[in-house]
Length: 420
Image (cartoon, rainbow, N blue to C red; front, top):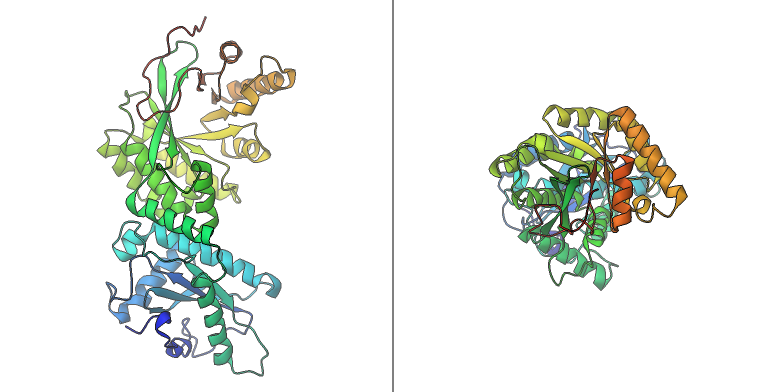
């Protein structure tokens, strides 16, 4: 094993061989990118694989994650993984932006796949860095290519080490890694009731931050995860926590779980990890409703439909969350044909006194009944709102009036709130 970057040794041997095996012919400058990733809990000790086997393992993982060979293994130097990216065909002005996005995505997947690749469960070596760095090989053709490549390495290494990050960002990153390493989040469950008979239909699982966390709530936690490349790992932890702590359900009751649309590209979900958690809790996939959130917009609806068909074939049901709150949720309803539409609280609250909201709700209800999609009214906070959504024919309801989120939620419709 060679010394780490911090040891000051230059990994020049990494730059003498083309990782695509093209007889030493590298992509032209500007068409080659260099990515560095911090390896969780890898430290500077020997990894689980002999040096000769590492390219095979990492290249197989890269091909699976990216669906091709545009990114190849370069070297592992201490606690850092170095990769080469062929940027051919990408405009020079966009190449660094695209490369940064690719590096962030790979760091996110590396965190999510740490158990498979490194033999650790979402563990992290405490470092005050962002976990990834990227640079495009640039400079005049008159300068030796190896020199330009090494300068790109130094640039990527400076980003990998987190130069320029604020103290607040550094502390937030360390807190995120602690939460993931220790599994330090909780789930609260908000009851969802049938609006006709008043009996319990199920619960929505809601993530809660640990007490004293630097994050002021779950929204801030998930936004930081999306921005910094932790979203796969955090979504997986939230899903596992929601299932393992789920209240006991009857055979026809449901657990609604919020998921990022990026889950559709998470091989661990496809491979059945969620089914194992469900089985351990005595639940079936048919008792799970996946609520697609707007945290991560869907770029390819055809791909999304194929993946959702895969989940439906296993028994899972699909809900579009926050319907009526934005254009993306309306488009998702049309394209994905969900089993449930969850009507956003911004439409429900005060709808008994707002004609515009009332008509919007009626439109959703008529559409849903025609399409045989079940509806859930969110954010019910007054008896007037409850009576309105019930009389409109909305199937289910949730809100503070009929049940607050709790780790030990109520099991029956609260007394004194009539459904008549």
